Image 1 (cartoon, one colour):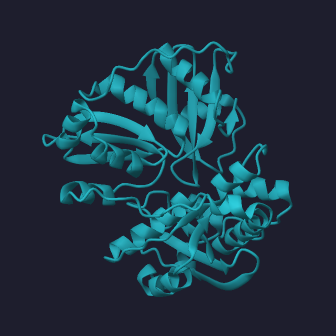
Image 2 (cartoon, one colour):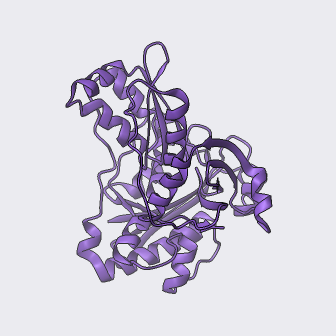
Length: 357
Protein backbone atom coordinates (compact mmCIF):
# COMPACT_ATOMS: atom_id res chain seq x y z
CA UNK A 1 0.00 0.00 0.00
CA UNK A 2 1.14 3.53 -0.76
CA UNK A 3 -0.03 6.79 0.82
CA UNK A 4 0.49 9.67 -1.60
CA UNK A 5 0.84 12.80 0.54
CA UNK A 6 1.04 16.52 -0.06
CA UNK A 7 0.90 19.35 2.46
CA UNK A 8 0.78 23.13 2.42
CA UNK A 9 2.53 25.06 5.17
CA UNK A 10 3.22 28.54 6.53
CA UNK A 11 6.90 28.20 5.58
CA UNK A 12 9.74 25.76 5.10
CA UNK A 13 11.24 25.10 8.53
CA UNK A 14 9.61 22.54 10.87
CA UNK A 15 10.90 24.54 13.83
CA UNK A 16 9.12 27.77 12.81
CA UNK A 17 6.35 26.70 10.41
CA UNK A 18 3.08 24.79 10.66
CA UNK A 19 0.87 22.78 8.31
CA UNK A 20 -2.17 24.50 6.76
CA UNK A 21 -3.52 21.71 4.53
CA UNK A 22 -3.08 17.94 4.13
CA UNK A 23 -4.17 15.58 1.35
CA UNK A 24 -3.60 11.81 1.24
CA UNK A 25 -4.52 9.36 -1.52
CA UNK A 26 -4.20 5.68 -0.65
CA UNK A 27 -3.37 3.39 -3.57
CA UNK A 28 -2.15 -0.12 -4.27
CA UNK A 29 -0.05 1.20 -7.16
CA UNK A 30 -2.79 0.68 -9.72
CA UNK A 31 -5.96 2.28 -8.36
CA UNK A 32 -7.03 4.71 -5.68
CA UNK A 33 -8.53 3.01 -2.61
CA UNK A 34 -9.13 5.83 -0.16
CA UNK A 35 -8.63 9.59 0.25
CA UNK A 36 -8.41 12.15 3.01
CA UNK A 37 -8.02 15.91 2.79
CA UNK A 38 -8.47 18.76 5.22
CA UNK A 39 -7.47 22.31 5.94
CA UNK A 40 -5.52 22.64 9.19
CA UNK A 41 -5.47 25.58 11.57
CA UNK A 42 -1.73 26.33 11.93
CA UNK A 43 -2.30 28.46 15.04
CA UNK A 44 -0.03 31.12 13.57
CA UNK A 45 -0.46 33.77 10.83
CA UNK A 46 -0.02 32.71 7.20
CA UNK A 47 2.48 35.00 5.40
CA UNK A 48 0.86 37.08 2.62
CA UNK A 49 3.12 35.73 -0.14
CA UNK A 50 2.10 32.15 0.78
CA UNK A 51 -1.57 33.13 0.70
CA UNK A 52 -0.94 34.61 -2.75
CA UNK A 53 0.71 31.38 -3.93
CA UNK A 54 -1.69 28.82 -2.41
CA UNK A 55 -4.89 30.79 -1.95
CA UNK A 56 -5.07 29.63 1.68
CA UNK A 57 -5.80 32.56 3.99
CA UNK A 58 -6.05 33.07 7.74
CA UNK A 59 -9.84 33.32 7.36
CA UNK A 60 -10.03 29.93 5.60
CA UNK A 61 -8.21 28.07 8.37
CA UNK A 62 -9.67 29.95 11.35
CA UNK A 63 -12.38 27.32 11.92
CA UNK A 64 -10.36 24.36 10.57
CA UNK A 65 -9.23 21.56 12.92
CA UNK A 66 -5.79 21.79 14.50
CA UNK A 67 -3.17 19.19 13.69
CA UNK A 68 -3.80 17.38 16.96
CA UNK A 69 -7.44 17.02 15.87
CA UNK A 70 -6.52 15.30 12.59
CA UNK A 71 -3.49 13.33 13.79
CA UNK A 72 -5.44 10.12 14.45
CA UNK A 73 -7.07 10.12 11.01
CA UNK A 74 -3.75 10.85 9.32
CA UNK A 75 -2.06 8.03 11.23
CA UNK A 76 -4.85 5.64 10.30
CA UNK A 77 -4.82 6.25 6.55
CA UNK A 78 -1.02 6.07 6.31
CA UNK A 79 -0.60 3.06 8.64
CA UNK A 80 1.24 0.11 7.03
CA UNK A 81 1.68 2.14 3.83
CA UNK A 82 4.75 3.58 2.15
CA UNK A 83 4.76 7.36 2.55
CA UNK A 84 5.10 8.82 -0.97
CA UNK A 85 5.57 12.50 -1.84
CA UNK A 86 7.24 14.74 -4.38
CA UNK A 87 10.31 15.82 -2.36
CA UNK A 88 9.35 13.44 0.43
CA UNK A 89 11.88 14.83 2.93
CA UNK A 90 9.90 18.06 3.21
CA UNK A 91 6.41 16.60 3.70
CA UNK A 92 7.59 13.76 5.94
CA UNK A 93 9.81 16.06 8.00
CA UNK A 94 7.00 18.55 8.61
CA UNK A 95 4.51 15.85 9.59
CA UNK A 96 6.99 14.07 11.87
CA UNK A 97 7.70 17.37 13.62
CA UNK A 98 3.98 18.00 14.18
CA UNK A 99 3.63 14.57 15.79
CA UNK A 100 6.77 15.17 17.84
CA UNK A 101 5.23 18.38 19.22
CA UNK A 102 2.34 16.21 20.43
CA UNK A 103 4.77 13.81 22.11
CA UNK A 104 4.12 11.13 19.49
CA UNK A 105 6.34 9.21 17.07
CA UNK A 106 5.50 8.97 13.37
CA UNK A 107 7.58 6.50 11.34
CA UNK A 108 6.87 5.27 7.82
CA UNK A 109 8.87 3.84 4.94
CA UNK A 110 9.47 6.49 2.29
CA UNK A 111 9.47 6.90 -1.48
CA UNK A 112 10.36 10.18 -3.20
CA UNK A 113 8.83 10.71 -6.65
CA UNK A 114 11.47 13.35 -7.45
CA UNK A 115 14.32 10.89 -6.87
CA UNK A 116 12.38 8.05 -8.52
CA UNK A 117 11.56 10.11 -11.60
CA UNK A 118 15.17 11.23 -12.03
CA UNK A 119 16.26 7.58 -11.88
CA UNK A 120 13.48 5.96 -13.94
CA UNK A 121 12.52 8.81 -16.31
CA UNK A 122 15.89 10.41 -17.16
CA UNK A 123 16.45 13.27 -19.56
CA UNK A 124 13.82 15.84 -18.58
CA UNK A 125 15.00 19.44 -18.06
CA UNK A 126 13.13 19.82 -14.76
CA UNK A 127 11.71 17.43 -12.18
CA UNK A 128 9.55 19.91 -10.32
CA UNK A 129 6.01 18.58 -10.04
CA UNK A 130 4.52 21.17 -12.39
CA UNK A 131 7.14 20.88 -15.10
CA UNK A 132 7.45 17.08 -15.00
CA UNK A 133 3.68 16.53 -15.10
CA UNK A 134 3.45 18.85 -18.10
CA UNK A 135 6.18 16.86 -19.88
CA UNK A 136 4.49 13.48 -19.29
CA UNK A 137 0.93 14.66 -19.95
CA UNK A 138 -0.49 14.81 -16.42
CA UNK A 139 -2.78 17.77 -15.77
CA UNK A 140 -2.81 19.44 -12.35
CA UNK A 141 -5.96 21.10 -11.09
CA UNK A 142 -5.52 23.44 -8.11
CA UNK A 143 -1.73 23.74 -8.31
CA UNK A 144 -0.14 24.56 -4.94
CA UNK A 145 -3.11 23.09 -3.09
CA UNK A 146 -2.60 19.82 -1.24
CA UNK A 147 -5.36 17.89 -2.98
CA UNK A 148 -4.40 18.97 -6.51
CA UNK A 149 -0.69 18.32 -6.04
CA UNK A 150 -1.25 14.99 -4.26
CA UNK A 151 -3.58 13.78 -7.01
CA UNK A 152 -1.03 14.69 -9.70
CA UNK A 153 1.68 12.93 -7.67
CA UNK A 154 -0.51 9.82 -7.50
CA UNK A 155 -0.93 9.80 -11.29
CA UNK A 156 2.84 10.17 -11.67
CA UNK A 157 3.38 7.35 -9.15
CA UNK A 158 0.96 5.08 -11.04
CA UNK A 159 2.93 5.77 -14.24
CA UNK A 160 6.20 4.83 -12.55
CA UNK A 161 4.63 1.77 -10.92
CA UNK A 162 3.19 0.49 -14.20
CA UNK A 163 6.38 0.90 -16.21
CA UNK A 164 9.11 0.28 -13.62
CA UNK A 165 7.52 -1.62 -10.72
CA UNK A 166 10.52 -3.66 -9.58
CA UNK A 167 13.01 -0.81 -9.96
CA UNK A 168 10.62 1.58 -8.21
CA UNK A 169 10.20 -0.68 -5.19
CA UNK A 170 13.99 -0.83 -4.86
CA UNK A 171 13.90 2.90 -4.13
CA UNK A 172 11.73 2.59 -1.00
CA UNK A 173 13.76 3.79 1.99
CA UNK A 174 13.47 3.32 5.71
CA UNK A 175 12.00 6.52 7.12
CA UNK A 176 13.63 6.32 10.54
CA UNK A 177 17.37 6.74 10.69
CA UNK A 178 19.19 4.88 13.44
CA UNK A 179 20.02 6.48 16.75
CA UNK A 180 23.29 6.13 18.63
CA UNK A 181 22.08 4.92 22.03
CA UNK A 182 23.72 7.92 23.71
CA UNK A 183 20.98 10.07 25.34
CA UNK A 184 22.75 13.38 24.61
CA UNK A 185 23.51 12.55 20.99
CA UNK A 186 20.05 11.10 20.38
CA UNK A 187 18.42 14.25 21.74
CA UNK A 188 20.56 16.25 19.28
CA UNK A 189 19.52 14.03 16.35
CA UNK A 190 15.80 14.43 17.10
CA UNK A 191 16.08 18.17 16.46
CA UNK A 192 17.83 17.88 13.09
CA UNK A 193 15.99 17.96 9.74
CA UNK A 194 16.44 15.47 6.93
CA UNK A 195 16.96 18.35 4.49
CA UNK A 196 19.77 19.94 2.52
CA UNK A 197 21.89 22.54 4.27
CA UNK A 198 24.89 23.22 6.49
CA UNK A 199 25.51 22.25 10.09
CA UNK A 200 27.82 23.41 12.89
CA UNK A 201 29.15 21.02 15.54
CA UNK A 202 29.76 22.79 18.89
CA UNK A 203 31.76 21.69 21.93
CA UNK A 204 30.80 22.14 25.59
CA UNK A 205 31.97 25.79 25.44
CA UNK A 206 29.71 26.39 22.41
CA UNK A 207 32.74 26.82 20.15
CA UNK A 208 32.26 25.65 16.56
CA UNK A 209 34.61 22.70 16.07
CA UNK A 210 33.39 21.46 12.68
CA UNK A 211 31.31 22.81 9.79
CA UNK A 212 29.77 20.48 7.22
CA UNK A 213 27.09 20.32 4.56
CA UNK A 214 24.95 17.68 2.90
CA UNK A 215 21.62 16.78 1.33
CA UNK A 216 20.46 15.23 4.62
CA UNK A 217 21.72 17.15 7.65
CA UNK A 218 20.54 14.53 10.12
CA UNK A 219 22.28 11.69 8.29
CA UNK A 220 25.56 13.63 8.06
CA UNK A 221 25.57 14.40 11.79
CA UNK A 222 24.63 10.79 12.57
CA UNK A 223 27.68 9.75 10.55
CA UNK A 224 29.92 11.84 12.83
CA UNK A 225 28.32 10.27 15.90
CA UNK A 226 28.70 6.60 14.88
CA UNK A 227 31.62 6.47 12.40
CA UNK A 228 34.67 7.03 14.59
CA UNK A 229 37.33 5.02 12.78
CA UNK A 230 40.28 7.36 13.27
CA UNK A 231 41.72 9.09 16.29
CA UNK A 232 40.61 12.50 15.02
CA UNK A 233 37.04 11.38 14.26
CA UNK A 234 36.85 9.72 17.70
CA UNK A 235 37.96 12.96 19.37
CA UNK A 236 35.42 14.93 17.33
CA UNK A 237 32.59 12.55 18.28
CA UNK A 238 33.38 12.87 21.99
CA UNK A 239 33.60 16.68 21.76
CA UNK A 240 30.14 17.24 20.24
CA UNK A 241 27.83 18.89 22.77
CA UNK A 242 25.31 20.58 20.45
CA UNK A 243 24.52 21.12 16.77
CA UNK A 244 23.08 24.11 14.94
CA UNK A 245 22.10 24.17 11.30
CA UNK A 246 20.73 26.17 8.39
CA UNK A 247 18.50 24.64 5.71
CA UNK A 248 19.47 25.91 2.24
CA UNK A 249 17.52 23.59 -0.07
CA UNK A 250 20.24 24.00 -2.69
CA UNK A 251 23.13 21.54 -2.43
CA UNK A 252 25.32 23.99 -4.34
CA UNK A 253 24.55 26.82 -1.92
CA UNK A 254 25.21 24.50 1.03
CA UNK A 255 28.69 23.75 -0.33
CA UNK A 256 29.37 27.45 -0.95
CA UNK A 257 28.31 28.43 2.56
CA UNK A 258 30.31 25.55 4.03
CA UNK A 259 33.46 26.77 2.25
CA UNK A 260 32.85 30.36 3.36
CA UNK A 261 32.21 29.39 6.98
CA UNK A 262 35.30 27.18 7.17
CA UNK A 263 37.39 30.09 5.88
CA UNK A 264 35.77 32.45 8.40
CA UNK A 265 35.70 30.26 11.53
CA UNK A 266 38.63 27.87 10.91
CA UNK A 267 37.17 25.05 13.04
CA UNK A 268 39.78 22.76 14.58
CA UNK A 269 38.27 19.55 13.19
CA UNK A 270 37.84 20.67 9.58
CA UNK A 271 40.54 19.38 7.31
CA UNK A 272 42.32 21.94 5.17
CA UNK A 273 40.58 21.71 1.82
CA UNK A 274 42.66 20.59 -1.13
CA UNK A 275 42.65 23.07 -4.03
CA UNK A 276 40.11 22.08 -6.68
CA UNK A 277 41.46 21.75 -10.19
CA UNK A 278 38.89 22.10 -12.92
CA UNK A 279 39.56 23.12 -16.49
CA UNK A 280 36.28 23.04 -18.42
CA UNK A 281 34.38 26.31 -18.08
CA UNK A 282 30.61 26.38 -17.77
CA UNK A 283 30.70 30.05 -16.72
CA UNK A 284 32.36 31.77 -19.65
CA UNK A 285 31.51 35.35 -18.65
CA UNK A 286 32.88 37.25 -15.62
CA UNK A 287 29.40 37.70 -14.07
CA UNK A 288 26.74 35.03 -13.58
CA UNK A 289 23.66 34.51 -11.44
CA UNK A 290 22.32 31.10 -10.45
CA UNK A 291 18.74 30.58 -9.28
CA UNK A 292 18.32 27.31 -7.39
CA UNK A 293 16.22 25.63 -4.70
CA UNK A 294 15.57 27.46 -1.46
CA UNK A 295 14.86 26.21 2.07
CA UNK A 296 11.19 25.66 1.18
CA UNK A 297 8.87 25.57 -1.81
CA UNK A 298 8.09 29.27 -1.49
CA UNK A 299 11.70 30.48 -1.64
CA UNK A 300 14.56 30.28 -4.12
CA UNK A 301 18.26 30.88 -3.56
CA UNK A 302 20.18 33.34 -5.72
CA UNK A 303 23.95 33.08 -6.16
CA UNK A 304 26.02 35.87 -7.76
CA UNK A 305 29.37 34.79 -9.20
CA UNK A 306 32.33 36.85 -10.37
CA UNK A 307 35.94 35.79 -10.89
CA UNK A 308 36.98 36.58 -7.31
CA UNK A 309 33.75 36.72 -5.32
CA UNK A 310 30.50 34.89 -4.71
CA UNK A 311 27.41 36.36 -3.10
CA UNK A 312 24.15 34.72 -2.08
CA UNK A 313 20.70 35.34 -0.68
CA UNK A 314 17.09 34.26 -1.15
CA UNK A 315 14.02 35.56 -2.95
CA UNK A 316 10.31 34.63 -3.06
CA UNK A 317 9.69 31.86 -5.60
CA UNK A 318 6.93 33.92 -7.23
CA UNK A 319 9.12 37.04 -7.55
CA UNK A 320 9.20 38.20 -11.22
CA UNK A 321 12.71 39.04 -12.41
CA UNK A 322 13.13 41.41 -15.34
CA UNK A 323 16.86 42.11 -15.10
CA UNK A 324 19.95 40.80 -13.36
CA UNK A 325 20.22 44.12 -11.53
CA UNK A 326 17.00 43.25 -9.69
CA UNK A 327 18.68 40.12 -8.32
CA UNK A 328 21.35 42.20 -6.56
CA UNK A 329 18.82 43.44 -3.98
CA UNK A 330 18.47 39.88 -2.69
CA UNK A 331 22.22 39.28 -2.18
CA UNK A 332 22.91 39.34 1.57
CA UNK A 333 26.17 37.46 2.09
CA UNK A 334 29.50 37.21 0.30
CA UNK A 335 32.70 35.19 0.13
CA UNK A 336 35.95 36.21 -1.52
CA UNK A 337 38.27 33.88 -3.42
CA UNK A 338 38.61 32.26 -6.84
CA UNK A 339 38.05 28.84 -5.21
CA UNK A 340 34.32 29.57 -5.02
CA UNK A 341 34.09 29.84 -8.80
CA UNK A 342 36.06 26.60 -9.16
CA UNK A 343 33.69 24.88 -6.69
CA UNK A 344 30.68 26.06 -8.69
CA UNK A 345 32.23 24.94 -11.99
CA UNK A 346 32.91 21.47 -10.57
CA UNK A 347 29.35 21.25 -9.24
CA UNK A 348 27.81 22.23 -12.58
CA UNK A 349 29.82 19.49 -14.28
CA UNK A 350 27.90 16.80 -12.40
CA UNK A 351 24.62 18.33 -11.18
CA UNK A 352 21.82 20.67 -12.21
CA UNK A 353 20.62 24.02 -10.96
CA UNK A 354 17.31 25.62 -11.82
CA UNK A 355 18.47 28.61 -13.89
CA UNK A 356 21.68 30.38 -14.89
CA UNK A 357 21.75 34.00 -16.03
